[in-house]
Length: 345
Image (cartoon, rainbow, N blue to C red):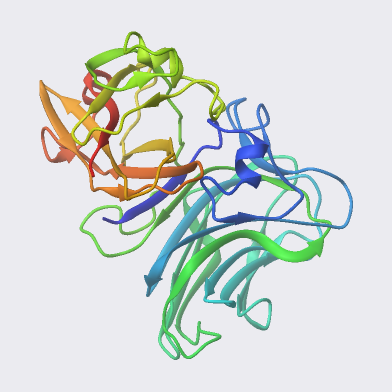
């Protein structure tokens, strides 16, 4: 797998963000704005005009190279960091803005300046920023693209990009844990590494769209909070999850629920992957596992089993290819698929 994580910030609310259901941690001033994203839908934002802490952390695993892309809308300019890539508790690498809109690349948390961009970002407009960093104590690489171009931004080789002795990082932080006045919004985010044969470099200016269940699929094994297994999709189609108010449940290994989803209406040049998001918890002792499901052409394709905790958490299953063809997703393939969940253990 190379595509590690995506978020369009459209399918959950601030309470879910603060509860660390999808992101591992967040600053107290972080919010989900339901209508301020690039296409009038959700985005990550700040909650006030004060001197505040706002950030979101995603913990993955140790990788020598990470590629992070996101759309950013800045409403004011002040000198502060807006992206940090972290090893343990130490920031290995960070990006910051200055008061003129230049992007600054640093080793550490603004510790050692590596380069300042020639170009500047403008306020009150969306820009798509991509950062590729290879961690090495002497041969590190930094590439910054904005709106699909590297011209005038940052391109470095043969750098010390490590603030620790380790030539890797594992945590992506949007924002910083330092109080600051910078005000911006984030949308359409992706994170990749370089392990696979696809999605192992810049993806370009992408969009991340969220789709909700709109109908029953082939499988309805789970029992709903309404005590039956009829029209289960109506219990899991919330724009923002409602916890124990409406849900489906099963304690039987092998049970599957699949659902039909709204069709994709635009025609993308490429579909880099589909991420199934399952918000789940267990309500009894013992081990319980779930797996994402794709049903395509009358065949079921289960993902890897993931152990469920006793609190609601978002479990992600990324499919970079259509399992029926083992090739990139197409609009027709996405629209014909069912997606769902399986009790795997």
